[in-house]
Every structure is written in C-alpha cells, then in structure tokens.
Image (cartoon, rainbow, N blue to C red):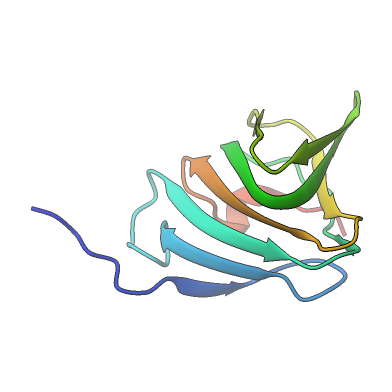
Length: 120
C-alpha cells in the first residue's frame, strides 16, 4: 500500500548558520530506520562539525556547491553532480560559497543523532 508523506519533518541542523533539513523518509518523517531521504538548504558560508557516521550518505546537489572535506581530499560538488560518502568515513560538509546550496541526501541505514558521531 502506498504511503504518502504530506509534508516533511523539519530537523534542527548542526553548524555555524541556520540550515533547513526537510526529512521525508527516516526516523522522524516515516518512522523507519532503513533509509532516510531529506532535502537540505544550506546558506552561504555554513559549516557543520566533522562526523564519522555509521551510514552511507548519497548526495545529489540541485543548486549551488556543497563542499565535502574528507581526510584525503576536499571535493566541491556542484549542481547536477552527486557524491557518495561511505559509512565510517570522516567527513565535514560546508557551503563556503555565495548562494549556498540545495541538495538531497539519502542515508542507508537512516540518519540518526546516535549514529552520526559528530565532533565537538
């Protein structure tokens, strides 16, 4: 049977500025821990604490540029591009450019504050 998500759950984001997270599927949106799917809108010059999550994160950038910094390199992911950050990989996300970014993230298993392991 189909499940309609009439509106996303708004999740408080970590970071230096206010970022909007709209979770459609996940622990809050659909009460499932198999997968989370969320739309993110990050302002210019936003940075979040580094993390080492227990989930794979697939991200597709719709507008702007999302910067992903790993222990090996920094990758700017532009509109129309995607990136996969594997579970247990240290990563820090930011939008250090004019205009910020809008993107969709899919986490397998679902994002959870208990499994993201953000640094202080």
